[in-house]
Length: 166
Ligand SMILES: Cc1cc2nc3c(=O)[nH]c(=O)nc-3n(C[C@H](O)[C@H](O)[C@H](O)COP(=O)(O)O)c2cc1C
Image (cartoon, rainbow, N blue to C red; front, side, top):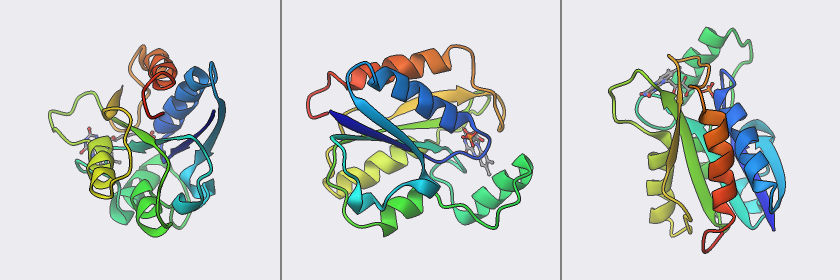
């Protein structure tokens, strides 16, 4: 089995979760982990399972404005970064089974979730989604991840191997 983990991350937390999920998947799959900036177009993904990780921005998926704000806060100089939203919208048709997670702040009372937004969209497109959206907590906006979240991510990754459809 081949799995691909594609993530968007500005402060590094969603990337850390991606690598932790990959560690769990590696117990039964060949796994590649890619920043969305380096990922192939979504229609060209060649894997048996795609895991998508995104930071929650303004209750959902990032947009150019929220990414600009995150990059400024993170002290990143790049002009612009691609986001999961654009990757999914612009890269063709996704046919691979998918599992989705997000990161979001511990402190927020807001119900938003980037992962839920992705799953809603994929279901509309009839893409098979093999697991409910999962969430990992960060402190504040910039992290670090809350204690135990990386271990939980590894367990979640391992659990994806035994789901029907994955
Ligand atoms: C512009 C912006 C908007 C955000 N909006 C939300 C939000 O609506 N709900 C939430 O729980 N966290 C929110 N956050 C916190 C992010 O979820 C957090 O920065 C992210 O999980 C960190 O992931 P990263 O280190 O991979 O970038 C926001 C952060 C930024 C920069």
